[in-house]
Amino acid sequence: MIRAALAVARTAGPRDVPVGAVAFAADGTELARAVNAREANGDPTAHAEILALRQAAAVVRDGWHLEGVTLAVTVEPCTMCAGALVLARVSRLIFGAWEPKTGAAGSLWDVVRDRRLNHRPQVRGGILATECAQLLQDFFAAQK
Image 1: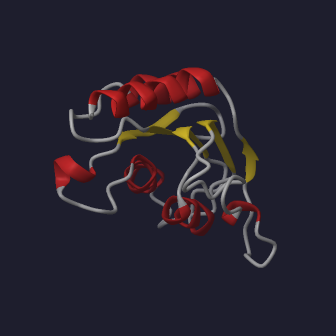
Image 2: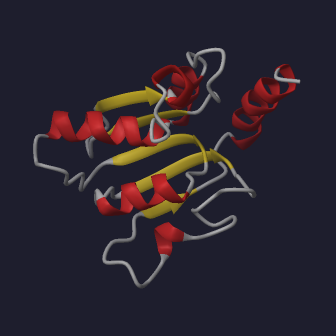
Image 3: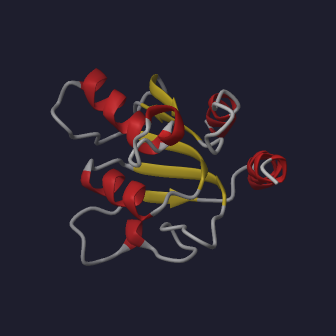
């Protein structure tokens, strides 16, 4: 699943941070895939996770409920994305690289496991972390 997210991350535009997200149904069927598009779309909410959640919701056609869905992301989600996947009732989050500056799945914050919220997905981070982190390091090195 993370390999699929890495593949989509590599399609990011030249100005967008290469983060990829892929949503899978409980049976493993791919529902949606998206790459960061904040710069391309001129939209501060166009993170890969948000775009993939929107697409998956349209496919599932159960309003906004994404129960049974696994969201695979190349980097630990930020607070906005973590909150969105909690509110969408995503069942499982898996991600690659940890993000100590903005991560909200255990690094800086832990929104996804906050006991005060009414839904907490299963979380597993650090999957293919080196490969996912290298993609980001290469992008930011080229920006200098």
